[in-house]
Length: 134
Image (cartoon, rainbow, N blue to C red; front, top):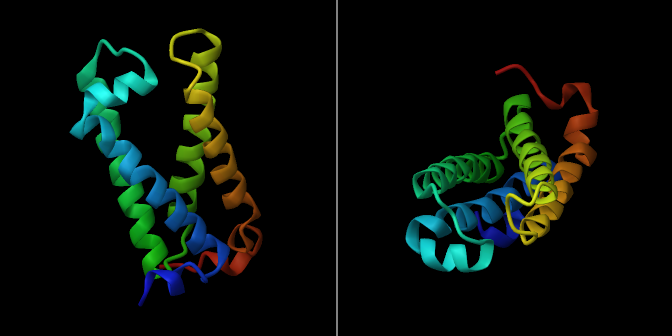
């Protein structure tokens, strides 16, 4: 099945695909070029933590991509996508306000808020039958 056809799927699958497409490259960026990552996001002291978080977000992105391409709807996928977007938005907004991380993170926080909203407006979220038992 082609990529353009998969983008015509229902919002649940589209949201999973879009979030996965966004998470995967941004999560892997510090693993491949930590210096350019820090040029954009600011200096970091614990590079092991930056890389660990990158790997975790890459796994989330990969899982969401697989769910979107396979058209798998489950509460677990919803919770993974919506939950990770909400947590990242909240953490980034808080730590920018505390001047711990650079204001550029507010751009990502805004994207995370949009992703979270997409999960909430998904028809699958509103229908009781959207998450059939496995």
